[in-house]
Image (cartoon, rainbow, N blue to C red; front, side, top):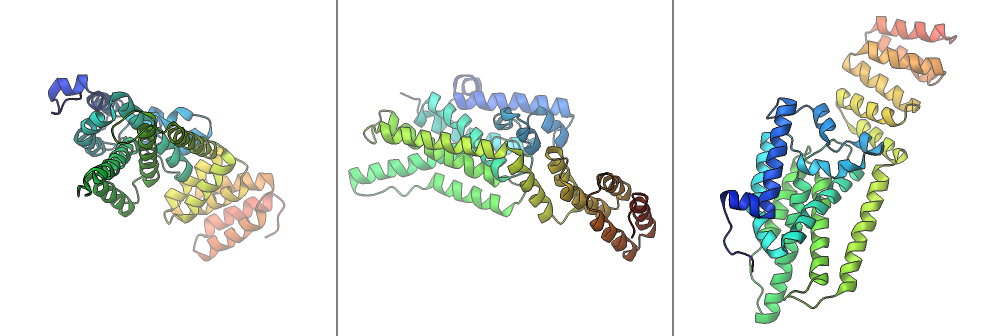
Length: 337
């Protein structure tokens, strides 16, 4: 029988799965702090090297990035929040699910959340949030299932809604904060619900008779959906338009340059994206970078009319030197303005 009282100290860290995961996350966080020389906000380039979810790197075949972000955290606040969350709910769910299923939900929900993030978000991300939402999904399923079982036995459903309210609050908070990776949260939550539903149907328990067919269908649906999201997020012809669209939606020229550059890393011949990056460079005041991109297009004989129009816009906006330089480059290529 699982213990009724949560162990503490080294007993918790060494002899429970939730404690071991918490200890591993702590060790990894300390290593990140040493490597990046930052405790509050590591550089994104360092996070990418350490294994964060990165759209371009995943599209280039680095599939292991669906797993590694689970153990990375972006600064002390992020690490502290997720660690407290794991400590608060982890052991309770471990005793309900059993050690092997608890670990399976934590890891598979984390992977599924990162698959969802890679399929629906182009922003770099890291953290155990998808795994933690998987645990919330498991708790929510058990809360509802146990409540139904109690109602069947007593005629009254218990009023406790702890996991439901936690899910609602956290999803609401995620919707209010645009930098939070809601795709990963929803993916992890869905995986936790489905995996726990499969567990209840596959493993003997006191709530219902085993239904292996339903459990197998749930597992199969998770696998098929995960494979579809992996294919979508690892195929450049699907990823490039998403990066371009993200840049088009942004009002920040620096963000636009970054996303257009990401798209060009996967499709260097996308001339329309090069032209958009030129405009973003000019909006930032980085005229030399924009002119370098323009030279590439001119050498290829592409987007020449659009570049002529851009030279006229530069002149009208009070940038005669840059306008003249762009006109000179076009004229040198044999174009009349």
